[in-house]
Length: 194
Image (cartoon, rainbow, N blue to C red; front, top):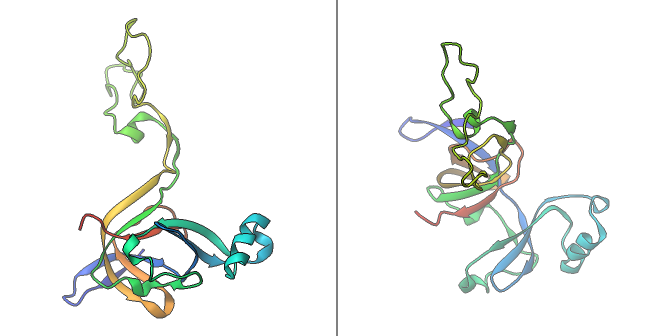
């Protein structure tokens, strides 16, 4: 992340995203198979490498299938590259990524529990406590909020405003934070609810 100032002099926190070029490997009825970030042939397994050779495209590290509108099917051809010029400044975007992993966490951090008593000899400040069931039903219901693994989930942040497009470097400046760690991979789509 970094910061920029708009025309009115307002301070804006932005995420810097390298978006493309993404070559089209395959065009299906409702989906496009896209590649991203070129890689050496010896870094890929032979079945994956065969897909790139069949399309006549240099191998890429990431291969992802994305849906698209059927009406636009004539616009896309195998070998064509999608770049940042498909977006305009002022567009709203939905950005999907894998959230940061936080390991095994207790209920206070994971679910925002208030915790137990803090004084008067209490020994259970951040512990689970009663689960709320006795002999009937005599078990813990599925989905009950308990300590466990936190993070590393698919997360979509909706309606992030596109502040600036830098086409010569394939860079987007998006207002606000995006999911995941630095140098992680994201899927960028035009916002559905805006």
